[in-house]
Image 1 (cartoon, rainbow, N blue to C red):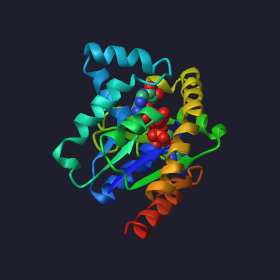
Image 2: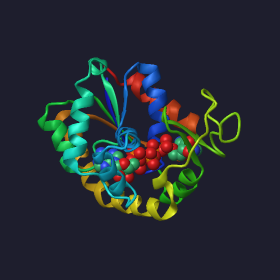
Image 3: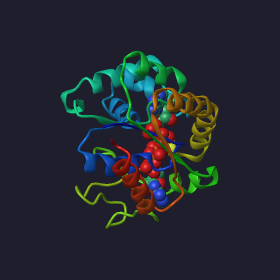
Image 4: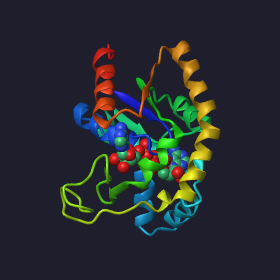
Length: 218
Ligand code: AP5
């Protein structure tokens, strides 16, 4: 089971990704999480990545493709994986194709852009695990504390409003050619490409994804 999750910032890719990987027992490969780990490590490359991310821009394709290749080669990906945040542009999609990394499903979460700021401004994360909360829609049991470790939650540095606006602008520019690319593949290669309403409640989106994966795998 190889799945790609597409969608604008704050649409729920990370949140739904966590449900999918649990159910299908596949690893969650989130490029955002991998990049944040690199930043936390304090490496030189991490510093470079941080400077790009806080400008709301995409990290260099070579860096990302290299990180993805290394991650997919790991043994736990033998039975599939979920890609969250990759590909983000045509070059990255073509990279997968060139490397003959075939994909079974593309699930694209769509959301009116006006909802994005509400989603992102209430987001809190547990940095070490990548667990995602929302102060209103998915609150932790105790305010600002991770349910499992008791550690403090934090706000992502790139969740500041002015950076989110730039991330969204970047997304709008790149998403149309990318979805067009996959729409064509859907016809040529019989790719299972589904668009879902990400504006629904968390459990409704989950139910719709479950339905798709259960009923169209074979
Ligand atoms: P990344 O971390 O991937 O960010 P993103 O794609 O912008 O997506 P987000 O993580 O912001 O949102 P999400 O869709 O996962 O939503 P979530 O589930 O958290 O990338 C960050 C940066 O890294 C990029 O800007 C770029 O610089 C770099 N990067 C990453 N990949 C790259 C690549 N391939 N190439 C180059 N650069 C790359 O949900 C959001 C909030 O809403 C949460 O609080 C959640 O609880 C809540 N929520 C979720 N679903 C619902 C719902 N249905 N109803 C109500 N609330 C909900």
